[in-house]
Length: 177
Image 1 (tube, rainbow, N blue to C red):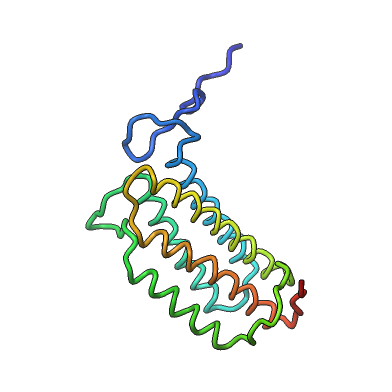
Image 2 (spheres, one colour):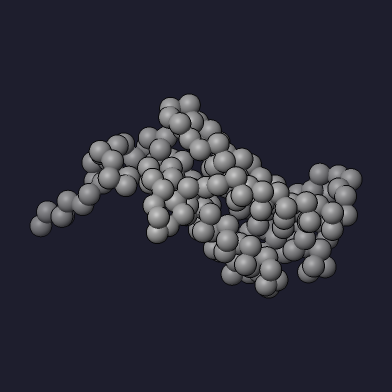
């Protein structure tokens, strides 16, 4: 018996009404990296006990969906916010400022790790950096909302600070390098 043919078996896909494109295109790669990051944020959220951090992570997931939709070619709609705005970046900067002021200053580099929750936040940080690199590469091919690059840049640092805060709140020492 011959297996059924599925869309995508030929290495092509469609993104929000576009013509077929290769699955290894920069558009698919950037959108997939943002989707992967969103999944890791969801995984990290499972281990977070701090209600405010959990709400922040859920807001970030919504923003990542917005970024994914925008990268996939969605246009602004009245019924959904399908475009990242400068206010999204400012919100992250405000969170970074609060965390940065509350945490002890770093005197050394630290290894990613600590508690399970902090370790997952470090994974989010590194996946965020990869997503940012993919979006920057895509930006060389087509016009990309500058706020997406800014957002992903801030987001990786926010995850770093959230990991540090989580370790501190759980009484877990950071490992110096």
